[in-house]
Length: 398
Image 1 (cartoon, rainbow, N blue to C red):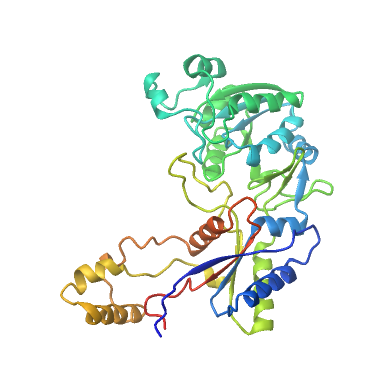
Image 2: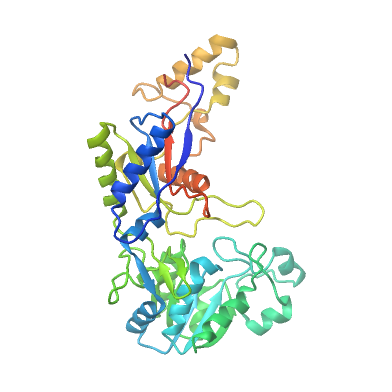
C-alpha cells in the first residue's frame, strides 16, 4: 500500500524536570512509553527533540541577580555603565536588567527605535512619518521621545517598556537615563563603559564600539564563568536567559552537543535504531500581526547530532509538473516525478537550478527546531519533547 502520510510531529509528555535529574533516562523512557501507548514504531532517522529548558533545568543552570551584579562589578569596575539595544521583554531581559542595575549606581539605557531587533515596537512607522522623522539615526532623549510620541504600549503585553525599564532600574537604587538611537557610537557621548545587549547583531556592535576605544562587553560575556555557585554558559553567558523567579534567571544550557550524542547512543544501544537528537529553543519564525521575530535565543539549536548538519536537498514538485513533464498526465506524470526524485542524488545528474527554486534551503536545525517550537508551544501543553517521524522522507520514499 502506498504511503499516504509524510512528516509527523508529535508532542511527548514528561514528568516535571528538576535539578540533578538524569535527563537521558527520562527522555528515553518518556519517548518509549509514548510510542508504546500509540503502537508507534521508532525508525532510523526519526528525530527526538528536547526543549533547551529541560536541559538547563536538569543541569541546575540558574543565576541570581546578585551573581549577575557581581560579575558586572568585576568586569567594569565602575559605578556608571551603559546598556545598549536590549530587547523589550519581561521574560527575556527584565531580571537580567535588574541584576545589572544592582551592580551600578547609574545606568544609561539606549533603546533602538522604532523597534528592538526582534520586532517589539516602541513606535510605529506611521508615528515616525507623522513626526517627520525620516532619519532613523537621530539621537533622542527621553523627554524628546515623550514630547513627540507620548506613552506607547506593547500591542500584546500592553507594557510601556520605557517606563517599565526605568522603574526597574530605579528600584535597584540606580540612577537611570534613557536615550533612543540606532547608532551605537552615540552612547560614547555618555560613557565609554558599555554592555551591549543585542542578540544577532552583537558581534558587529561590539566591534564598532571597541574600535572607537570603548570598554565593551556583550551579555554573552556575563556569567560565561560561574560566580560562586552560579550557573554559567561559557559560550552565551546570560544571552538566551529566561525569567525563573523575580530575582533569578534560567540560563541557556551547557554541553548540549554532549547531551544529544549521549541520548542518541542510548537509543542505539536499546533499540538498534539510528535516531537523531536536537535540543531546541526559540523557533526562527515571524508573527504576521505583531511583526515579532520569535528568535530571542542566540541560536535555534544549541546542540544536535551529526546527521542534522546541512540543509535540505529538495526539488520543487510544481516546477517539475509545470515544466519538465508538462505534457504528461496521470500515472505517467506521477511516475516521471518519482523517478526524478529517486535519482536526485546521483553524481551524474545535473539539475536545472529552477528545479530547486523556492525550496527554502535553510539549516536543517533551524527548520526542525522551528517545527518543534510550534508543536510544543511555550505554555501548558506539557510536551517538552517532540518526536518527528518522516522528516527525511520524500514522495519517492517507499
